[in-house]
Image (tube, rainbow, N blue to C red; front, side, top):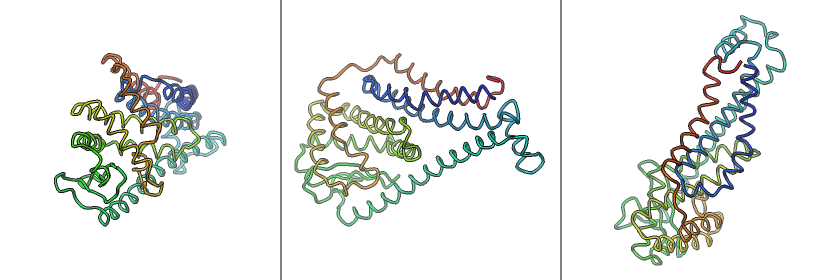
Length: 316
């Protein structure tokens, strides 16, 4: 497992810096948003698995030739049937680091989920006071506010789309339809789960370039995916006008009105600019074969550390 640990460490290093930097600077993800989303998820998962796997494999080097043997021997030490001296200080430190990092990632994932859910409950309680149900749109709440605002609040069967009076007064029926389709796409495609996962990843490892770049990229890609769905039902000019009007309203909101993951959902100027540029100066989508190759490459990337850890004998 010695060479396995070093290979995983090298893979973790590559996925932690050059790969996410190059991907964040690339222009093609906007032309293949779904494939790019899969690739970002694969980079994050493979990177985390490689970091933990490298430390785990190095720590188990004195105890066996593969992960199964090493874990079995480690269990013998834990229950007192073998001496800790077999492990050695450096390898024990590596195992401790792997365990601590794993616990840190899991705890941060849970803590982020708990924080977002608490903020959503608080937000929903405020909406119950400050909003009223739409008369002609199911699962839609209207808040009395002259700033044009639209966002969705996930919550399973209690998910709602929130609109402001200012938005309803400003938009035409077709523009409002574009907004509703866009927000409904976020809910049906479970984009909030992606935001949660990448937000937790960034909170757990804020010093890692992957975590920051991935969160920014995913936030932009989910907007592109929702725009693509909206374009199936409304014209491009309608969507462009809608994006500009809603973005102007979001810019007028004070920071303390953005609660929970809605702060991530409301567009930043950079995201709005990218969305408008993509619509005003469109480039053709990547060929289906190319997108399929990207997805296959993403799956292969995730399979590499998984196979190295689970299949004995791939590397000594």
